[in-house]
Image 1 (cartoon, rainbow, N blue to C red):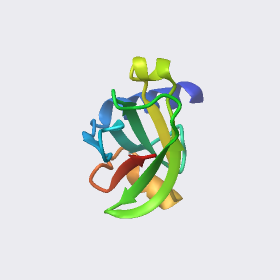
Image 2: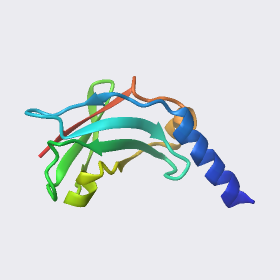
Image 3: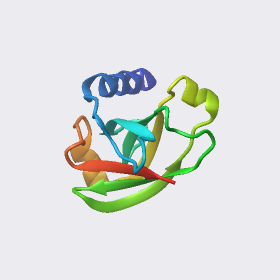
Length: 120
């Protein structure tokens, strides 16, 4: 019963969290930020869903900077291969969050708190 409950909750997150229309890059948008949320599947995490654009280069490793209220909080990387770019496959980028943040942010739209910048 528990896996079904978790799957239903995860589905509700996907349906309830609104799309965030923000993207960043100097010289062309590399990816669009589709969602920023706390996820049941990635406990104690802030998840950013990125969708590649026509400016995304295959196999290029991009740095993803997470900003909290305009202040740099964390950094990781993301890349897409050419077939993933061709079909605009979204990538989930995972950033650590505290238990307290996770509890408060679950089910919430976080786009007014967090933003991302992608660059080479």
